[in-house]
Image (cartoon, rainbow, N blue to C red; front, side):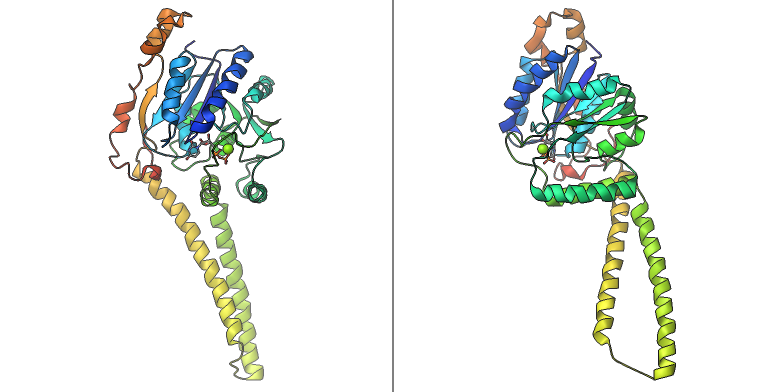
Length: 357
Ligand code: UDP
Ligand code: MG
């Protein structure tokens, strides 16, 4: 089973409380599909026992489990990127570790792919998130669609299926700050969406604060569109024209009515408003420049500490008889170290950067 039909990629960050529940539902669900599969967990530098739990699980099911261990927290999207680079399946499904999307629905995504779609997104049947997430995500969805022309009904839902050609395209990208569903969408020939279930988080709590959601949305906007910058040039032009007209008006007033010094506070209000816009514009410019800076430094985007996987030989040699299993399976770290050295300072692991050649 060196190229399984399906790879399931799961980023894991501090999920110790929910992992066992995930295993209990995920493996039977995939076994039931009756196809060759592998599950690829990417531990995104968890500080709890997640890594140890994944290791145990790997020893239990080495035939279908692989684990990539990061040596720091590089973010959900980088974890998925690493998953994509290590997975071998013809089709790839991404799933969150928190059981908010039922693994049993994987079949739905695959069935849709059988109809000839190469990228199947998902829409959460009824979202079980806090109300502010609902409102914010509805607003961001609308804005994003206008700005990036990427059509996703439900951008926040990571339960998606990708065909191998999309995975290869994504793997050839060296983007530092990215938003995987949108990247995949931009490569898809024939995207579709299906409705899947959504539940409350099984355990633990959301890893996204309001702040990190805002950051993520900036990634989404700036990585896929220049429209925000263009809007600023347009706005600048508009304001110039308006203030030109206003100037003419003031000159005429001066000639007709004579000198006046009223309206000081109106002037202040106007000034502050314009300064606000200007600052926002500079900030926006900074978002782009900062991303360019991160990109050109060519640092590794993430550092892999170890990969737990059954050695190719073990697999082929013993064929179906995975008897050689557990300890033969602990073959791991091979690819790892080479990449792990360079960046030296793990102090700011989430400060990413490219590389990973
Ligand atoms: N995650 C990750 N790295 C992070 C944050 C999150 O790998 O820095 C994983 C997390 O373990 C989960 C998935 O990404 O599997 C989605 O996270 P979460 O459920 O907290 O996001 P939400 O559902 O609230 O959007
Ligand atoms: Mg979640």
